[in-house]
Image (cartoon, rainbow, N blue to C red; front, side, top):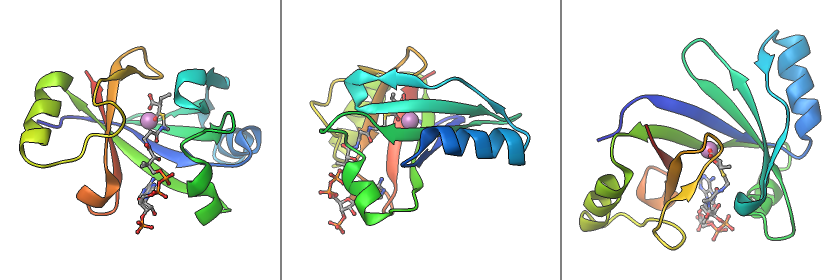
Length: 134
Ligand SMILES: CC[C@H](C(=O)O)C(=O)SCCNC(=O)CCNC(=O)[C@H](O)C(C)(C)COP(=O)(O)OP(=O)(O)OC[C@H]1O[C@@H](n2cnc3c(N)ncnc32)[C@H](O)[C@@H]1OP(=O)(O)O
Ligand SMILES: [Co+2]
């Protein structure tokens, strides 16, 4: 079912500082900040030879990462995103196996314009898992 590692997400309080750190200290290629209103975050992507880092900053009072940042004030790894060939088939198989799909269970369009879903961290070794349609 899961394929390539699409990205590793890091939640931060200060997106521009995190982007500057990776660009200026680590010499990485860093995208512009993009507000993702439907997801309650603003994102910056760091493009690496074999995957991406997704920086997330809360956007709005209902951002789903606010409590995570209260628990982790310095920021931290928030989720990992795997690619799947068929996100609806993957969802249905996971639900049939008892995994909890977050939200309504219907995919949203993610930062790359592809459908994404999230699986409850308590079902996957304490790790929030995102699936993105390849
Ligand atoms: C623009 C899209 C972009 C893309 O890649 O395309 C994105 O990635 S958008 C990213 C932001 N959106 C989401 O994260 C959506 C899915 N997340 C959620 O629905 C929430 O974050 C949720 C439900 C996972 C956690 O929300 P919250 O922290 O408010 O809930 P709880 O406090 O009740 O937490 C329950 C339980 O889970 C533990 N937890 C929470 N977040 C994480 C995490 N990131 N990794 C590991 N564990 C997590 C939390 O500590 C609680 O554990 P407990 O032992 O019960 O205290
Ligand atoms: Co993501």
